[in-house]
Amino acid sequence: MNEASSANGAVPILLTVGGIFLIGLCADFLGRHTFLPRVTLLLLAGILVGPEVLDLLPDFTEQWFPVLTNLALAMIGFLIGQSIQPESLRRLGRRVLILATSKVALAALLVFVGLLLLGVQLEAALLLAGIAPATAPAATFDVVHESQAEGEFTDTLLGIVAIDDGWGIILFSVLLSIAEGVAGTSGAGGVLLSALWELFGALALGALLALPMAYLTGRVARGEPTQAEALGFVLLCAGLALWAEVSYILACMTLGALVSSFAAHHKRPFRAIEGIEWPYLILFFLLAGASLHLDALATIGLLGVVYILMRSAGLYLGAQLGGRISGAPPRLYNWIGIAVLPQAGVALGLALVAAQAFPSLEDIILPTVLGTTVVFELIGPVAARFALRKAGEARA
Figure 1 (cartoon, rainbow, N blue to C red):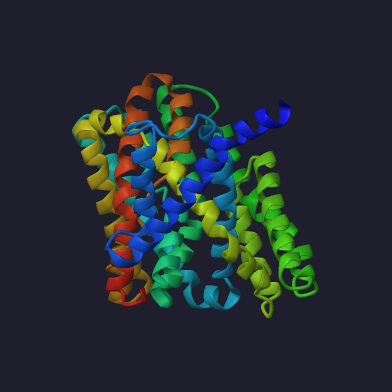
Figure 2: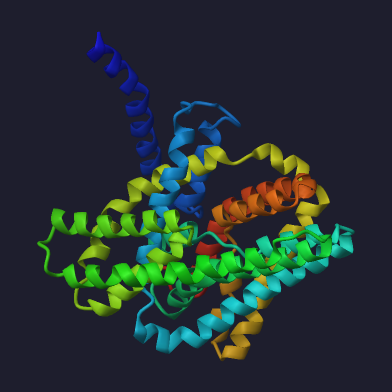
């Protein structure tokens, strides 16, 4: 009886995982033969099988999503870090820094001004402006990987995505502090200190783990031992970051960047992660689609439309401004702003923080961010692939 009960309990899990992987196979095939990236196809499939439409997923998948999010983003952070080497930083560092800063600043500024002109309360406008610059590194990275893109534009895009969330979290914390000051609530200074700890603590943690990992890399046999080494360090880094309440994405990016620099002649850990990441990403993106709240689209109204338009315009104009200041070629700054449209988990996390700090504004902030995230998650990867092709660096 116990064996039969255990087997019956495994049935929905096995059927669900098998079905999701086959959907991922179809998404990969369609992504190669249509204009839609596989990320968007997986999100659409998730919406279709999720509670909003067919409601085919078992209840236990809701418990999987937070863990899969951590797994997927930790691996992606590590792989993005590989592109941030001293040579590329010397070549692109100033440009990436200026582009990222101007893009973040313009997106926040235009959203803030647009919402104020719409008559939105000052505190709500400040908070939504702080959320606007956040991007979706997982979606952007997968579009780059699927497109087999290489070159100056791609390196710049990945560099911007790598530091975007760090800048975005700091800006959000500053604007949250201002909003709390306007409202006369306490704790504004503590929020800013927490943001600085989240940023610099992540850098320190990634650097600390990079030293033993760089030493082991190349001294461990190829194949399965290398996979165990790579996964062990990446997941340890993510777990310690979550425990220390620092940015685990940034910590894993730092780990990847320093390992790539200190052990430049060994690419085994990066190839090991690349070889196993796609199954995790299939689960992550499909469950992300299933968790999207389509009913939020009906509630965003004019406020949501203004947020979408102002954020998009801010990202584009910020890239234009930063590109011209940094001396970047036109083909780069004309398309970078479009390539960074995806927005996902970080924005939702910041929205929850804002709602906790201002419960009275929850009915404005959460529906707006939830609804607009659906839009940006679906059209953002399409825009990113389009930008890579227009920049002439997409090979697939």
